[in-house]
Amino acid sequence: VINLVKPIAFVKKLSVSLSLSPDLPEYAVGDEKRLMQILLNVAGNSVKFSKEGSIYVIASVAKVESLKDAWLPDFHPVSSDRHFYLQVQ
Image (tube, rainbow, N blue to C red; front, side):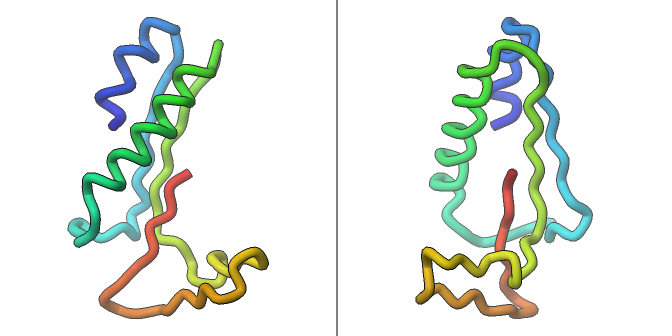
C-alpha cells in the first residue's frame, strides 16, 4: 500500500512513512485482500485530501483492553497466544 501511494504523494510533495512495531508477528493468517483494500482506501484518502505535510502509517499489536468500545457492548475481545488484534493508525 505504501508503495502504491508514494508516487502520488511525491507529486504533491508529501512524505509517507511506515512504522511496524517490533511486537508484530512475521506472519499472520487473515483476509489479506480486505486488509489491503481498507489500508489503500485510508492511505489514498490521506494523500488525496492532504495539501502539505506527512502521512504516517503505524502498525502494531493492539492491547485487548484498548479494544473495548461503549458503542459495541457485545464485542468481547479475547486474549490468546495464537491470535492477535492488528492496530493500524
